[in-house]
Length: 58
Ligand SMILES: [Zn+2]
Image (tube, rainbow, N blue to C red):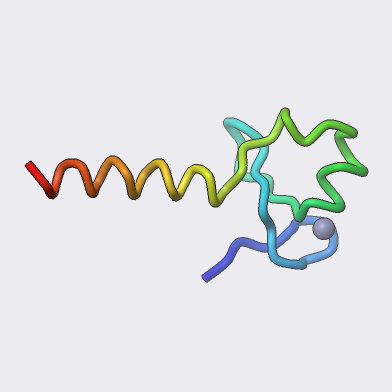
C-alpha cells in the first residue's frame, strides 16, 4: 500500500511537509533541489512504530 509519486507515479519515498503531495526521490530532487525540505515517509513510519512499540511495552 505504498504512496505514489504525483509526477511519475513510481513508489513515493517523500512527502511535502503539511501537504499530501508525495514524490519519489528523483522527482523530489528535481522539483525541489533539496530533499531535506521533504519528510521521508519511511522515517515517519519508523518513528510512529517506535512510539507504538514503546506504549505496548509499558
Ligand atoms: Zn517521481
